[in-house]
Amino acid sequence: MRFADPELLVLLALLPLFVWLLRRDGRRHPASLRLPSLAALPAAARGGGRSWRMRTLPWLPALRLAAAALIIVALARPQTADAEASTPAEGIDIVLAIDTSLSMVQESIGDERRIEAARRVARDFIDRRGDDRVGLLVFESRTLVLSPPTLDLDAIDRLVADTMRTGLLPGGTAVGLALAKSVDLLRESAAPSRIVVLLTDGEDNVRTVRPVDAAGIAEALGVRVYTIAIADPGAYQGVGGEHARRLKAAGTGG
Image (cartoon, helix red, strand yellow):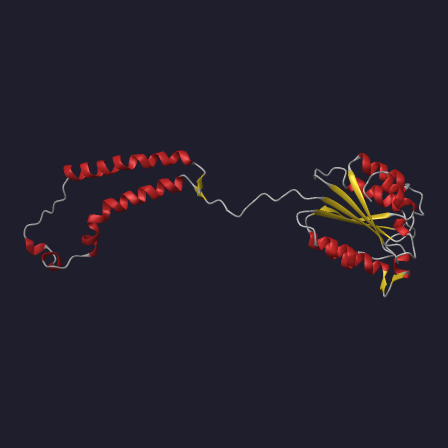
């Protein structure tokens, strides 16, 4: 326990003086009862019984002292510190960039469409984040930011489950543009680590921003990039193709 105004507790040292003053006042002015005769006293006072006021009278000095002490403590404003409270660890700022181009619906991995595989992987990834902030964007030939990095992971999960779908943007696969936009979302982040996770099934086919140029921007800003290929193993290079090799060459950790 701590006090907001601990200096007021010094007043507790004055309580003995308060007690001494009460006793001195009692000796100077002893209680007296002026009555013409005992007949004016109630029968209970003459007998063995006493009223509750009479019984509590000896305790009045102690009660006054306790009340004064409580008032002083209250004025000092006691505050309880939560023993379990702790400053949350600084987490990572992450942007999930997910390909929602038409091929993500047309192609499949086994019995699962690629868009569903991407959704499953993304939701599992979000579920494993602790104090990390996660943002979300989808891309085809353009990008659409669904959320900047946030600690509201439930909201991000709902966006992945309910909003992430094909047809939101013109067709195409702008991997470089998606990476550049993801890095831009992390530009002002003060997190100790910043990461882009790129989920796609295809090569970059929109030359707005070259993947290697976007990777260079990420490297310059200290943003690490990880790529996840949503494709049948060995059947489609996707992210394992040329632009992924360029990302690795740029030193982004993809």
